[in-house]
Amino acid sequence: MRNIIVALMVIVGFSGLTIAQEARVVAEDDHVAFFKSVSGDVKVVRGNSALVPVAGTQLFRLDVVSTGPNSSSGIVFKEGTLLTLGSSTEVEISRFLFQPEAEKYDFSLYMSKGEAIYSSGKLGKLAPGSINLNTPRAAVGVRGTRFIVKVD
Image (cartoon, rainbow, N blue to C red; front, side, top):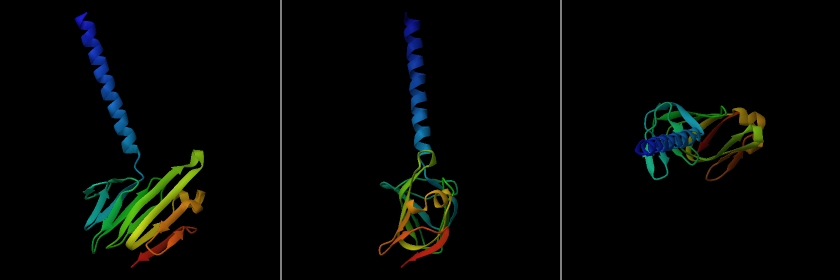
């Protein structure tokens, strides 16, 4: 009887690890973009914490990316959109949804300062009306595939 109880505890313990591992994989897969390049003083604010990214660092919805003077970063979104941030720039990933099988698309950035180069990925081809870039004074609806935006 004791061996059966020990065996059940081992099985339950392993299944608990499997569930935890699966939850971690799902959470890691919720990223919306990653850094292709980082140069100089670049920070990501995620919730109440800040981190210094390197190439490959994943980005999530509601992350705020800021670059310092003489700094820049290249960001690649899951569907191929490229965003290059220049020096002294701050941008928040407000919304990102790319589910072509369900025809659900949504992409919104808030840029409070700085300059960036935007180059559309699949979203720009499939649902250009779902892309928005907001600044303190203007909202840009993306209809082209590549543009530069500067916020003073």
